[in-house]
Image 1 (cartoon, rainbow, N blue to C red):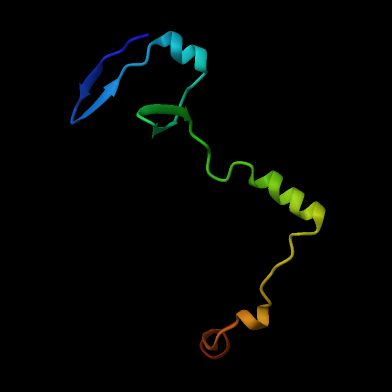
Image 2: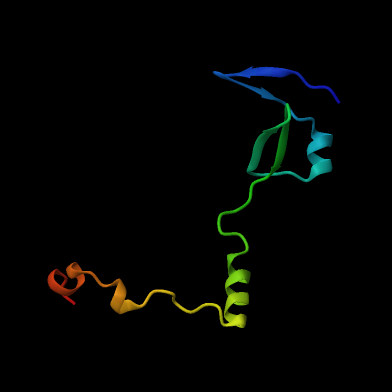
Amino acid sequence: MKARIIRIGNSQGVRIPKPLIEQTGLKGDVEIEAQNGKLLIKPAVKARAGWAESFKEMARRGDDALILDTEVALTSFDEDEWEW
């Protein structure tokens, strides 16, 4: 299917025909990247997607302990200047 690059304000764009949008199921925000002289349009990944599942798996494996020792992390500011 052919389309024409058109002027949109100071930018350029391509109108994507409805059948292609319906076929891909794309909606809302998308990510666009250039690959080997082609444009790839894909659904935008939500920030922190999959984090909840990863944290559950870490807890299941017992791999969710803090790695910083609180005593080591304290600075002179924490001990001398900060009012607890």
